[in-house]
View 1: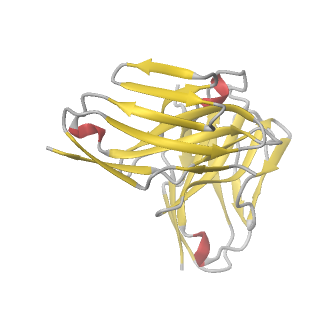
View 2: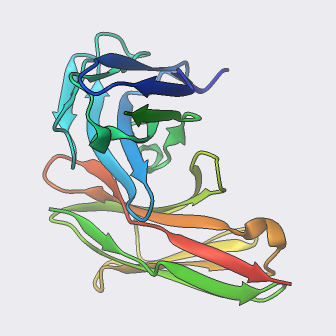
View 3: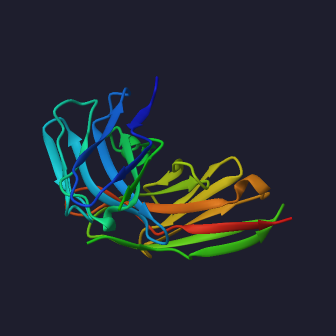
Length: 115
Length: 110
């Protein structure tokens, strides 16, 4: 199993550009989520999904869109990049049964810089 | 909403025991979990508590008191490789999402 994969690993954007961060998992996990990590701010939840066709907003959703057309994939779209979106982005997934829900598996992260 | 509080930094000596505390607020509660993150890496799952009490996994233990909305991670026989950031995370709220604390940086002195 590849686990949770994210592409790209690094990205530099100019203000106003759009892009999609890719996330895929091969563990048949129902729950998938996107976090951003900034120094001193911990991991902040952007969007999450409990299954294909279902998405919901997290703590900091503004400026980001997601979709979940398949169980495996959960792309994150930046609509019009801003310098405030410079961050490290992590995708995570887990099962949704009672005990496994809390054990999230993380991808390696995407380091995004917006100039 | 949901929120978590944990110390920003803790320092301990190699071979000693250290406790990292976490208090949380959530409208609904389904579990408190702990993650470890080394510099430049991704968070990795350590442990999870849904019920009151202590859960032990090797050198690491995690404790939960739901009545106090409080938990801690206990690391024993500290090794230099335990130098990392540790995050508590709560699953709960109206829509059953998982929210992380800001993390505790653990420094280990030889």
